[in-house]
Length: 338
Image (cartoon, rainbow, N blue to C red; front, side):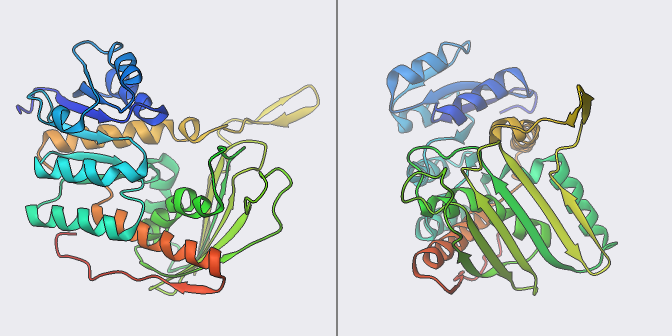
């Protein structure tokens, strides 16, 4: 592919996230076009493809990846389908942006990691989009200066207005806290070594049987302690906040005070209602970064190792939720590629 030619992307999965990425590639970012969409739902794939000039709809992933007008792959299908798509893309040595999770468990993540390692170079970027959020990037830059001293604690709050009907208690950890897992490792530059999950009385707003909220505690190999309040039926909107406590100061993001209004005896602002709204700019920045790197023949951003580590931490968290107590995280030795 010429550096001047647009990156021709096959988008696998045309649900909410996949369709939004198709829109983003075609209308927001530069240097790429959607040449193919893949979905087991043929009608949904055709409907998305019809909105893009020169885009072909497929139901068979292998056929799509073999098409001559596919240079790269964006995986936005459900988590259990990721491994097959990743392995197929790696077999063709195609650059990949894979929405989180890399895969739903550490065993399958290791199989993907091994397939990439055999290539001898990185091909996969994992979609932990918070690394591309302006506030998180500013916090990361501040920590890297060392002005605040060594990080001692990190407090996280992750709230959703309401959970989807299919959500389980385990998914609060594996699907939601997965983001804080990556954020913790990235901000602090440390691996998570143990997880404890505390279970407050469930809110009356949660569906029957759903343990919501939860209070998750991480320990790291650098001695930091990290907590995550995960509350997916808070009722009022979508909030993501973080505060790092260091030896010589603290820093907090996510208060959402970009604009405060005063009117009719009231003051206040707005609260985002879902993750796509809150992190729209981060998704734009993430995808543009991936396209730019892919056109240069490079891979940047969260790696397959990051996806594997997050899966291993979430597995420990699910065990802690089910069985109680403190569960240690088991990681293989980190390959030199990462």
